[in-house]
Length: 293
Image: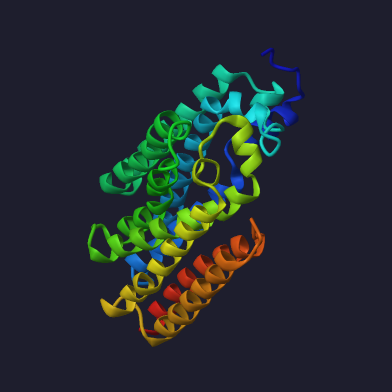
């Protein structure tokens, strides 16, 4: 595909789109939350800057390379056909070089300015997203969603390691909560775009197993979040405010998903947005209750 001629400003905009800034923003929020918890509220401005920069670069680089490998299927999907590579506004080779540069800058930033553990975790996150999810599994099996959850679950761990300097049980709990939250969050969205994924030949769970099985698995993961969300309180990470909030939110999330299971609706964007609300409030109260303790 021939790269279209664009102005300098327009070209910068197209490259920015390749980095999926919305996703990068969410990554940075969870990273900062993990860092606050790891440092017990004693954040050093320069360390925050380098941690967020390095983690953001890793997320952006991974997104660019993901778009490079998915440019053919993105052309077939209505939701993604307007991205820069399908439209021909960015040369694929240039995009790949850009993505690799961002990953390299991420590793150096975290390794030199934060700590080696954070740098390695960021590269593991990128590897799981680019290689395991995008290149190996996405077009072959619906299990790709669970495996891809590794990358999204690591940002708060990176932040925690940056803030504390160590990997411990607290970091593992943060990872598990994020890991178990992601599949049901994605599957509800995948139900909405089931025809799009089918047209592109991507065997997401709704495409490969159908609506009902997707609803059932969504409920299983949501139910698992209920006891898991209480663990931070059980191990002394947080206090009673978090415990009550996590309990109420998780019960509500489970009830909402159960209602969706038995409804005739094949999609529910309200449940999708509630899942975002759930994880945002959960981490916010975790940080707030850390201050209280």
